[in-house]
Amino acid sequence: MTGLRPGAHVVGVSIAGGAFAEHMVLPAAAAVPVPPGWQDQEALGLLVNWPTALAALRPLGGLTAGQAVLIQAAVAMAKHYGATVIATAAPGKHDVVRALGADHVLDSRGAGLAADVLRLTGGAGADLVLESAGGAALEASLAATKRVTGRVVVYGLAGGEATITNWDLVYRHQVHVVGLNIGVLIQAAPQVFGEVMGELSGLVAAGVLGPAAPTTYDLAEGPKALMDLEGRATVGKLALLP
Image (cartoon, rainbow, N blue to C red; front, side, top):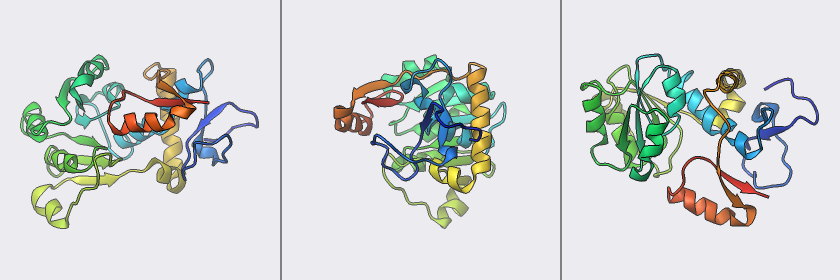
């Protein structure tokens, strides 16, 4: 981002860690102005989650209208761009995901995920998969992706590491696999990140994305917040209040 002035009200993302602090030095690209009228915790969606989802959908994922996308988040964003959204979530979160506009909702922990996606896409597979679960889920994501032209953007590993070999990509899953780390994107491709943030600002201005309503914890409850996140017992963003 450019054009920030001293004293500007911003939220920022720590690229190198250490965000649980009172003060932090950030590169300008990692500091985002808080929209007028938004509280600090409401602006958290402007960091990490939304930019990562938008980067995965658009410049890296190449999403276009009419394509089928398999995602765990960013439902409203994908629908805005004209996608058929197949969302995955734990059963207790299905109603929340449907309310966001998902066309189909599947059990993120179900054993037949790839088969379900193939059925919903007439056997073709998803044009784009946003993958953050990792572990065994990555195998299901690869199997659910359209051969040759399908893309899998990997941006997390909550379920652990996974192994993909060159044999897999030649003989089992002929797909495009793209790795995404938003911190590296900010540093290595600031122009692309700037384009993402400009488009994100447009989505906010158009009302496609609005203030987040995170689950809040007192700062002293930081360990509990992390445990809840690890246990997948949360919905949306979490905020620690000083």
